[in-house]
Amino acid sequence: MKFLHKKSDGKPTWMILLGLTGMLLGFLVITQGRYFTNYVETEGRDSNENIFRKIQVLKTGNDELEEEIKVLNEQLADLDDQTLSIQSIENEIAKNKIISGNVDIFGPGIELQIDTEINDIWFVDLTNEFFAAGAEAIAINKIRLVDSVSGFDALPNGQVMLNSIILKPPYKFEVIGDKKALQGGIENPYGIIDKMKTTFENFSYTLTEKDRIDMVIK
Amino acid sequence: MKAVKIVSVCAGILVGVLITVQFRTLVPLSSSYPLDQLQAQKDLIKEYADEESFLKSRIVSIRAKIDEKIARNNSTTQIANLETLNQLKEAIGLTALAGPGYTIELNDSPFVDRENINGDEQGIVYAADLRDVVNLLRIQGAKGIAINNERLIATSSISSVGNTILVNNSHLVPPFSISAVGNYGEISLRLESDVNALHDLKQRVKENGIKFSIKQNNHIILPIYNGQFRLKFVQNKITENILN
Figure 1: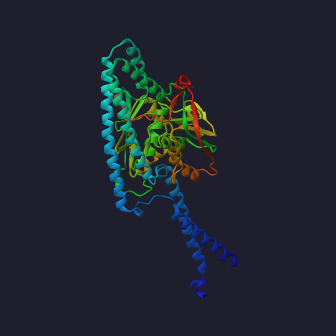
Figure 2: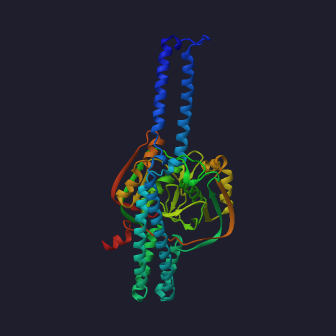
Figure 3: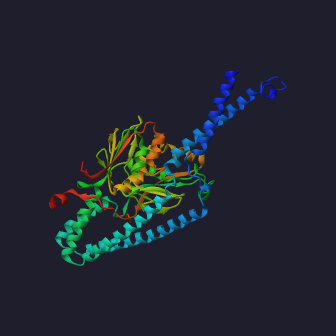
C-alpha cells in the first residue's frame, strides 16, 4: 500500500489521483451542462418520444377529414334546392363566424393556469400542443387566438406581448375541446409540462377540467 | 491527510452522481429502439399521410364545386349573404391569397443526414424552428402564411414525427419554403436589428450549417387551406340564446 502514498519522484500519488478526478469532474459537468442546453433549446422542444400519440393524431385527423367531406357533400346536395341553398349558405356563415372569432362562443374544455413567468417560446409551444391535441378554440388571458391575432412577441425586458397586450402571470389558457385529449396532449410523459418543470425551478401550474368555458369577442 | 481523504471520497461520490445523471438523462436514443418497430411506425405514418393527401384533395375539389353552384344561384338573399360569406372565407384561409410578400427558405446543413441523426443534432431544422419563424411572421403582421404550399390557419399545428415534420397533419420534409403575404421591409429589418429574433436558429445557421435565406417576392400566391375545421365541442352563444 506504500506505493499509493509515494511515487519514486516523491510526489504523493493521491495528488495525481485527485487531479485526474478533478479533470473528469470538470469534463462531466461541462458535458452535462451543454447536453441540457441543447436539449431544451432544440430537441427538447421537439421530442419524438410521443410518436404513438402523433400517429393517433394523424388517424384522428383523417377521420375528421372524412367527416368534413361528408358535411361538404351534404352542403353540395342542398345547393340544388333553392330553399335549402339559402339555409346552407347561412349555416356556412354561422360556422365561419365561429372560426373567425366574430361571435361569442362556449364549450367544454380545460383551463391551465401557469403561475411561473415564462418566455415567448413556451407560449408558442403550448398553444401548438393544444392545437395538435384537437383544441377548437384557445384564449390566453381572455385573448382568443384567431387568424387576425398577432404572434407572441418577446419584449427586451423579457415580457411577452400578444396583440399589443403584455401578458402577465398568472397566465390563464382557456381551451375548448375534448378534455381528456387536451390534458393528455400536454401532460403526457416527456410532454410540454414535463419540459417546463425541468426548465423552470418551482414551476407552478393548475389544470382544471371545465364543463363550460365562455369566450367573448373583445 | 484525513481532510484530503474526505475530499477524495466526496469528489468520487460527485463523479458517481454525475455519471448516473448523465446516463439517466431523458433523451430519446434511436439506437435503443427496435428497428422493426421503427420501420412499422414509419410505414404507418406514410399510410396515414397518403390517405390524408387524398382526403384533402377531395375537400378542395368539393369546396370548388360548392363555390361554383353558389355562384350560379343568384337570388337577392344569396347575393347579400354571399358577400358576407366571402369575407369570412378570406379571413379564415378558405380563399387563395395573393399579394406582395416574401419567401424564407430553410434547409438542413448539407453535412447532416436527417435519416441518421443523433438526438441532439444541431444541424437540422426542427418543428420548433418552423414554429418560431411562423410566430415571427405573425408578429410582423403577415396576412397569410404557407409552408411548402400548406396554408396555415389559426389552429394549425407544427409538430415533429420522428425526423420529419407535420404541418396541419401533412407530412413535410426539407427544404422548407415559408411563404407569406406581408411587408418584406418590416420582416427583414426585424431580422437584422433584433438580436433576439430567431436567436437560436441564427446561431445554428452560423455554427451548424443550417441554410436560411429570405427573398422578396412581389406576387406571392398562397393556396386555400385544405384541411378540416373542428367544431365538435364549440358552440355559438347566439344560437344558444335563441334556443333558450
